[in-house]
Image (cartoon, rainbow over all chains, first blue to last red; front, side, top):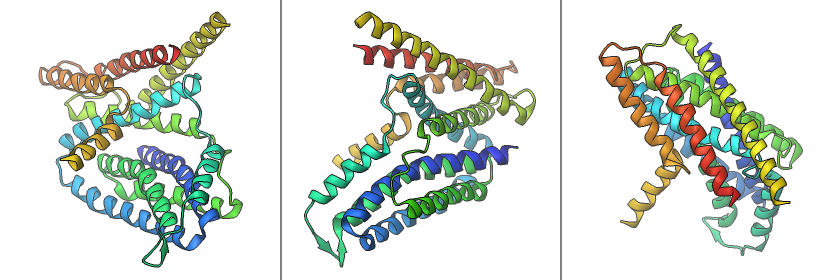
Length: 248
Length: 68
């Protein structure tokens, strides 16, 4: 069961981040040409693969309790960032992510930038694609490494991430437009819940606590955090509506 | 020095993000969980409770800041 959650968390997190990276890559490729852009994408993916390949096995050398305490704690704090942002977006306190608007902004900047050739590459297209893939992918690498090491299954975590990259890449190549219909906030909500639940489970276990029902406690944590998040979204929505009415 | 500062800021923003109080609460809750577990007291409930309370507090503060 935790294998399924592990795959799901890395797949969904990677899909969300890769949709954002795809927007940047499309803006670079469609305005500046594909050769330099795709070399930038490949370079970004290669750096991410090296990070996972070095950090993943290095973490598995640490004793499992210490690893789960530190990495679980990091995963929990990191997951809470995703969850907090998703709740603020769902309740209307933060703007939703708009891939089409981001694409238009990136496209306009790419068109306005001058031509600079370095090492036979359009340097703007290369660096835009490289940075886009690397920075968006860094969160994925962090999740793959921490999640995979704590679950003692970095291979499965990597499979989830690679599967998502392939799905997004193929979809992007086919439709050649930003994937604005992907429900990013919902996906971020689910990933935030998964990271928070697993982070709580591992961190508390690493600190010495024993969970009732062992691994089954993860499902209980998921339900608990989902219920709490739902209550927070509804409360904030109601508060925002009342504030808007009072201001009108 | 500038590089070290930027490097530190990047990781702070990457892991801790907009509200440091959540991270501080998680660290404190883990320390108390460790102490309770060491005394053979049931401690699993503490971390989810602290997370739920501080997430709510952080959201409330963010909503207040955005309402101004």
